[in-house]
Image (cartoon, rainbow, N blue to C red; front, side):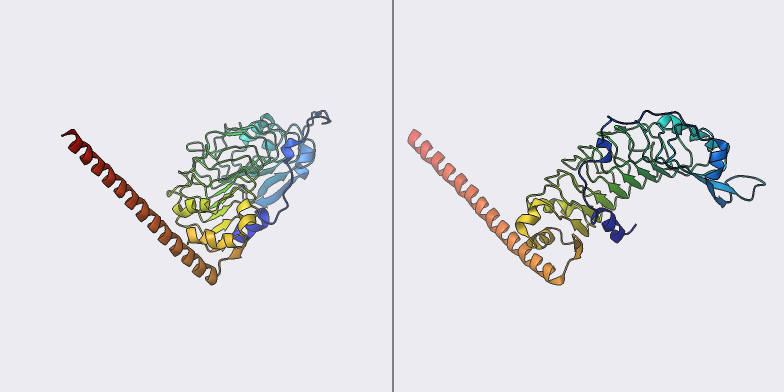
Length: 350
């Protein structure tokens, strides 16, 4: 996904109040046990292809997709041993019901969005690369052990805590999507292989604990009550894109804290108080602090903005130098006066 596609997903979308996980438990229908039969399963098979490690078998169905069937039991699926891609979204499956898929030796992708999983505690799948559990009922993100997993989506759950998002549980994770939860901090994400991190629409008040994310390229923090930009580190040498839309940044000087990010070229500040107070001037002010920026919000940085930012930077540096010199002089004069007073006291004593 390139930057333009990212914008389509996270910059142009309408902001909705709350999250799907806030829906009331009242009025929900009683869960009626319903198992997928083998005859039904056969009708949902698809994607003919070469199965993994299947001697003598040239072609087999590699995918099963069973959505919107109110299923509580999918234990029949492992009877199709060559299936590598499973989509059982929009059913009534919990983590125990999903655990039967451990018998699919070559499972590569599991989509189980809009079910009723309360935890992430699933078996370790040796070849699983993509796992999506969006819009379940997960409160604590812990218990996953998927060494080769590359993409993990847990958006719109009820998570307030993160644990063990780090090796050895995850050794190859590149995309982590946790937007639409109730996280108050970024701490707990310590997987150095992550390249894209989506944390929009949480309750995050500060950035912290991301020092180990040396390969992180894209960071989404949109719609969080963040009011300062401390917590970024010089070790984050790959970070090029930060989305802070609709946060609580009041002071443009907070942007100065992003100078530690040597590769930052895109910064989204729309709908922050600082934009309302400064108008378009916020672009030039931001650029005067972070000269590596090539795009602010959705518009590319213009040459005249670069020149204006350089002038502001020179003026600021000149003013800071004068203030520092004045402070140094004041300290010197204070010490000199103190020394003179001491000499007078010594003469009086004599």
